[in-house]
Figure 1 (cartoon, rainbow, N blue to C red):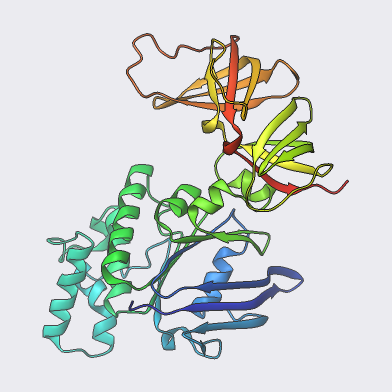
Figure 2: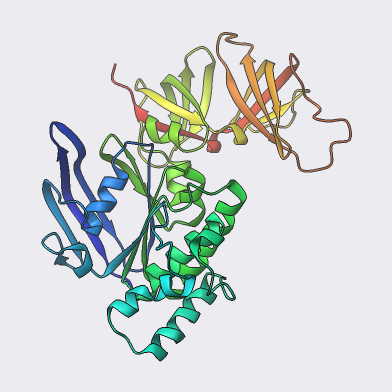
Length: 372
């Protein structure tokens, strides 16, 4: 791996009387595609700017390969940043924008020519060398910015919401290109975003932040399937969050007296829980099966709830249903049904229909204990 290990140790940042970062610690592996994910104002960009050297921490340490870089200005750190607003020179051509870091170092013109063409090819901009930024689309401008950031061969590339100004399809295309580039050059990527789908689709690991605190660090699978707390469970994807008291356990399978729904079964191997504990547990909408007839042959570890749809939303590849369970008509559960085949007459379940919801205990997850 060509990248650097990045360590953030107990970093705090104050702006007057506002604390933007609260003792943040991260250990980012060499060559990792690491994302920092969170809502606007959570401190993720402040953290990135501290790593880049554009902001000084109020307390704490930032190191690259065990070297403290806090005293170093941005131009002395072996990293580069790609910004949301491109930061291109409007009077320079694409070629000269990309070549600029090497021209500053007074590299040999032949080396510059070779390297510029190499990185323009990597971002699919061959043939656009003589255009000015004003002649480019937003996606092309961002590709130029990425090529310029990479041409000086940094050990770490910082990306601050680089795709947020682009439309959805272009974001997805450029995101896949970033993943390919990362795999091709092998340096460390630190990617800041508020978009969970971006973070989950390309990252080796993700840190979820809120209000200046890192709430969970893990693989995309861990973040999605095993949220560490209610905020992560709500912020990552959609979820049904349910409270209840553990009645009994059989190995790793727990029976929970769920408020308003009765006994539901949940499998949890991440930690041990005890009967009598009040807990928050979840079930993702896409893991719930919804049918108009009562399903047969369910195992003893399946949950089954009759109910009635009170809202249905068709979105092409799936339908989203909101269901009032029969046991508690004041409650609502979200259910997603994937459309796996052609629907000649539209979805077979619609508004105000009696339905049955079922899911395996393995598909639920106990998030945390609730103080009583």
